Amino acid sequence: MHLKKYLYLSIILFSCFYSNAEDLDAYLHSKGLVDISVLDSTIRVELVYATSDNFMGEAVYSGITRAWLHPDAAQKLVAAQRLLKKEYPDRTLLIYDAARPMLVQYKMWKLVRGTNKVNYVSNPANGGGLHNYGMAVDVTILDENGNPLSMGTPFDFFGEEAHTNNEEALLNAGKIDQTAFDNRRLLRRIMRNAGFRIIPYEWWHFNACSRAEARQNYPILD
Image 1 (cartoon, helix red, strand yellow):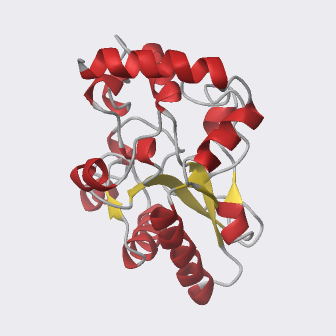
Image 2 (image 1 turned 180 degrees about the vertical axis):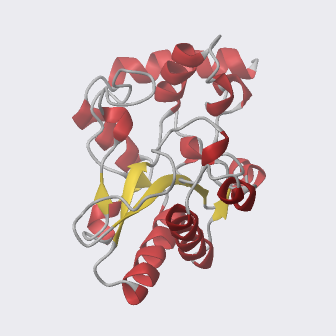
């Protein structure tokens, strides 16, 4: 069966059984994912896509209430939090997004298709992205007062100022300041030392493995 047709039918069946927040949390738990707060309650969670305060202007998680990750990714995130706390005891990681079922991916794709934001959402017909395996996380760092450190742009800012592959040029051009530059370097250093990988276009996004490794070793979240 063609991948796109298979995924579409899977989403229909999924929707029939998991229609509310509690069911979605139960579904992710049944797939072997772990609730980050159970592993480390000091990691803060604000799931942006469970609210309407996001770039799509509507909630697409139907109220998923917890940040779920595959255990392999979760352990890396806990390690990152420990590294951060060792260096800055009063700071903490904040999760904006974690595991994302393909049901949600289809919703997001439908909302951005045909817009200038289409390149920032993985096409579910191509198998989705690392969030759909529970192997990616979107994070930032909170200061001692619980406020996000300046990173030069907000979360989900779709422009060159959020790119990670030309930050010195952005700094020199005055598009981000030295504080944001240093904070991004801190976030990346912590996450890389814990085993995560970065991507070129989003300072907040970190992958726990490559897409090829995910497809070979981890089940996709229908």
